[in-house]
Image (cartoon, rainbow, N blue to C red; front, side, top):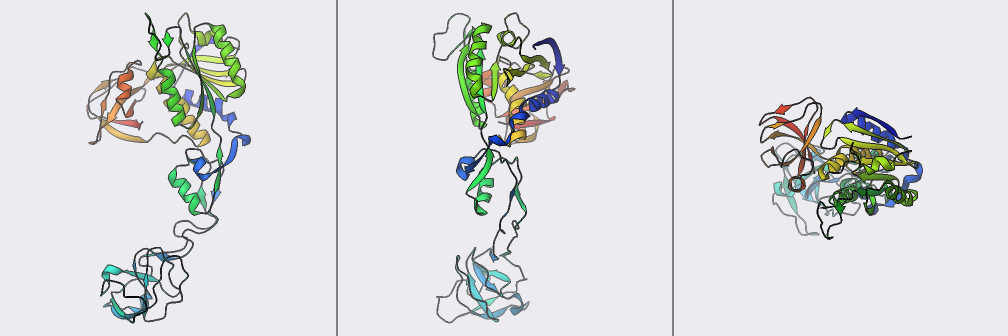
Length: 407
């Protein structure tokens, strides 16, 4: 049933509530096997164990000469030049007293245990293949410029753990191990609904008291960037019955409903009214901006209600939905978090975790963009970071260190 009592929660507590709400979506039927390129940006659904060594054979790290290290004393030695070893062949055993020209990545000849770079040889060039030649080389310890088999990863070792975000590096490792496909989570389907009689679509006539809808664009692009499939309904009016009907038309085809607006304590909060009779709670989170939040289920489908101001809804996504999806499904990847020093002083309201927009500069300082207001879309557009001021901190001086999430 709808709960009318308003309670308050910390950022951490509400994020955990969002995690509990969405955890049942992590089911085996959401796992598919994707070709490597199609898996880019998804989360790995199962542990991957290496089926072979990487490298699978000892090979040269440099262009140079493969030698037996015991053939070259400390003061160097002159060795006969053996047949060259290009990449991609299985070479013959290296005879004692000889040095084999070897290319980077080529297999080490049996018997050879070190490589001397070509620039240290005298002469410092490879002889013409087939012509008798000698080369003077300095001493080299066993293992010098040799990539041993399994030095990257060994057969049977954990290559990637379930929950890993699959970026180019991870997919490159899977390709190097011989995989052509990978088990990953299917993207969640999100129904995105913006509400408000005062909101109109960009490009429409802007009458008195009307504003263009930026929330839908902010959130849809953020969600698509995070790998989600988004259905955007257009703008719902402030009539609860219309919103209820709109939601019911789409709930059979989505995994999660996200609304913006209509979750505060005003007289015409349409999301609150439309959720009457459903297991949805509206609460205040100790967050600025983004304090008013809704959470629960509508006809059995998880629903999150974000505030209506543009920056508030984006901060809500970044603070709650994005990190929870990353933790549950391995995608999207966490925002890179760095420490930076404030380029100016700031104040923060008591009892709230404040999130400010800012620009991280090359000198390691972060400058604030705009004020703390939740309507400052221009300041957001000129920012490349979110600046965090935790609960319990009322003021920070210029030069104070803060945590910054890169956007």
